[in-house]
Image (spheres, rainbow, N blue to C red):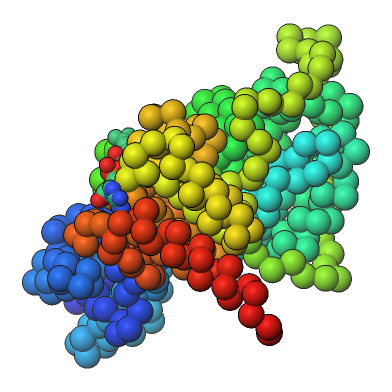
Length: 440
Ligand SMILES: Cc1cc2nc3c(=O)[nH]c(=O)nc-3n(C[C@H](O)[C@H](O)[C@H](O)COP(=O)(O)OP(=O)(O)OC[C@H]3O[C@@H](n4cnc5c(N)ncnc54)[C@H](O)[C@@H]3O)c2cc1C
């Protein structure tokens, strides 16, 4: 082929900052950049080193504030138009490796969300995943489908339609009444074998973590656990972003040679999409059901956990008052309880507070704890280690109280109070009570 006939390469462009949108999230863009092409200003905003930027869009996808975008020079725009006109690469121009990859993934289509349920009630994380799944399906131009497995759970298919699914695969049988790995694994693999989805999403709950790992192993495909971001690259592969190396960097993981691509996402990481009325979709009923006699696990009784802590749903709380090592002792948490009571909120904490025995483990916020997204998160005596930030930085409003003005928690705080928490919190409580006594 002559030089002039050579297929054009798509220009990649460079990244630039969209003014006023950076939320100083703690340098996620910098940590994900593969070429060290981002420096941070003192105020925590990225400065793109254009000579280094390769337009890989990793930072654009990682940015929680949509503050980064790709731009093209005039010359690149002309090239881009020519590239778009040229269309897809002719088959004989695709290298062997790419041909093999395409063969391997051929025939897989659509985005699936596994609808986790217990006693017919869906876990909220499944609907959160519908929002993320819909976005992926839109980008790929495919359908968003729900997978509903249980006993008398058909209503969940209809609920899935209200969250954006256009089809639901339903396996409804008494053998699925309680979650057990074996029958659910067989059921999922049966559906995947039959319908070949390209992406399968599950909640990173106890059930989701158990099932996703087993399914990925049997289907001989990859699984990325605890994703905090999902996107599609320019070849149509799923980009799965999650903290790595102890949370010090954000890694984007691909599974470009195997299908389905599987991810789990923790509750509260993705926003809940709006529920729409008057929706409809197709229910695909499947009668597959393993024989009870062949299942080794039997559920004799369900005993609800009583672990000394109450049944508070930290991940779903709207107001959280969180304490760290700065609280100095378990007794001092009574101060946080007082503040939380005034706000109608709940108590959370850093891993240091949990390790010290001041709080039960289910109150830990962060990478190895819960991910929270409250309306208000008040961090008291918490330094703001990256492992803590990944669990709370998407809260609507963050108020940080710390006596060290250099503490990293202030980088993600909406309001920062530099001071001794033992003085600041009683004053806050006093002022809230005073406000409450004032007439409207
Ligand atoms: C693999 C891994 C996973 C982890 N997972 C998590 C996780 O899920 N969640 C988590 O939180 N951590 C996690 N960590 C631990 C994390 O790295 C930090 O060690 C921890 O978050 C620190 O907790 P802290 O902020 O309470 O304590 P410190 O870092 O010791 O901070 C205490 C803060 O209190 C301030 N302070 C002290 N006294 C006062 C006062 N009187 N008034 C106001 N401020 C005061 C200090 O200035 C300081 O900033 C993880 C670590 C690893 C390696």
